[in-house]
Length: 174
Ligand SMILES: [Zn+2]
Image (cartoon, rainbow, N blue to C red; front, top):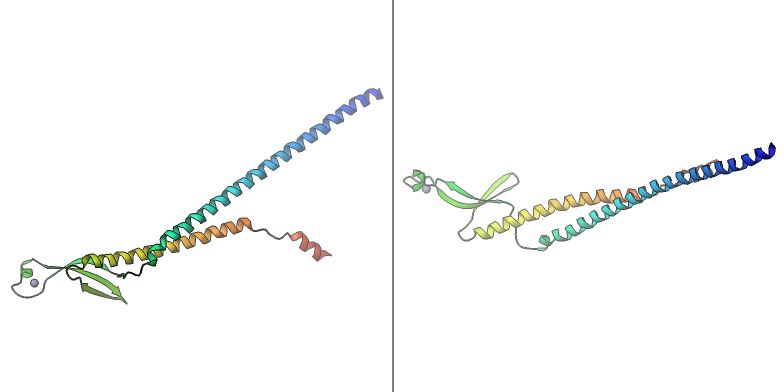
């Protein structure tokens, strides 16, 4: 009877041990899988952030080009001004208004108006366009700057290692 009992007991325990081993193996595998996926997604996210940083940096390189120029700029607007001169008997009094191209600019709350002499329209338009380009570049650089700082902070957060508090507790307790 006891022999029979031992005979049953030993394979039973072997089976249980095998089952526990299998269970631990499965749990370990799931843990490694989850940790692996986590690590991979972190790596992919970090890689994407790195790419974003690289793109923004290369965009800056392209943007600064117009800043190297020393050609004059005008902060203003070019448009056609139609007006009456006020002289009696002039064509403008009959509705045929005087037309001239002007450039207007507001400085310190005042709007200045300057008539563009014949033949200078293209030149003035170029100066106005270059000013607008400068402002556009400036605005974009500000945007890129803010984006880069945001990406940089994200990357820093992913790289940062916190000091473990266990060492602190041990030294404090002992
Ligand atoms: Zn007139």
